[in-house]
Image 1 (cartoon, rainbow, N blue to C red):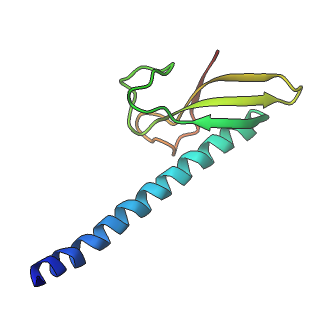
Image 2 (tube, rainbow, N blue to C red):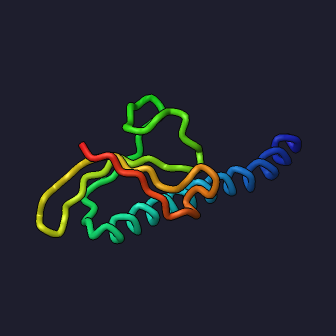
Length: 104
């Protein structure tokens, strides 16, 4: 009984840290996407990140530091477009302002 309590007391902070780091990374990804949309004068209507099994417009060999989004945007003149956005670069990740876009 005490062994399981000790294990739970040790595991709980590690699990909590993993959840906090995941949520922080998720917020950083969304902020980077909104910064990109603002810099391009686009209104971001929706954005989704593909799962590993979903096809995207970018190769499978992209760095884990880069993030790919499927986006639907509206331009200032009211025209709506959809496409794929890859944020960051292979070495600095979201620390870079690089963005590759492939429109449908």
